[in-house]
Image 1 (cartoon, protein in one colour):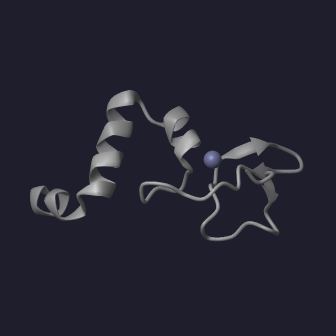
Image 2 (tube, rainbow, N blue to C red):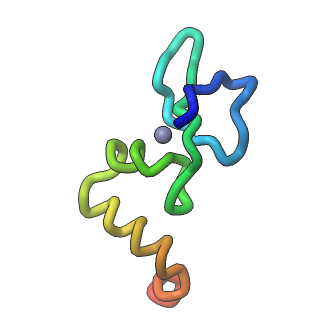
Length: 68
Ligand SMILES: [Zn+2]
């Protein structure tokens, strides 16, 4: 488990959820399910149904492509 990161240290794979403001600190855990957030933050950002959907989409990218 890594500590929150500042905007200067933020990498493309870091979770984008702001955990502290002024100065801004971002969650910094690895992104999950093809979103901009880590698994823990996805659970907070998405509803239970939304979380199930993105987990399914991450596990079955082609099936969703065909639907869309
Ligand atoms: Zn996070």
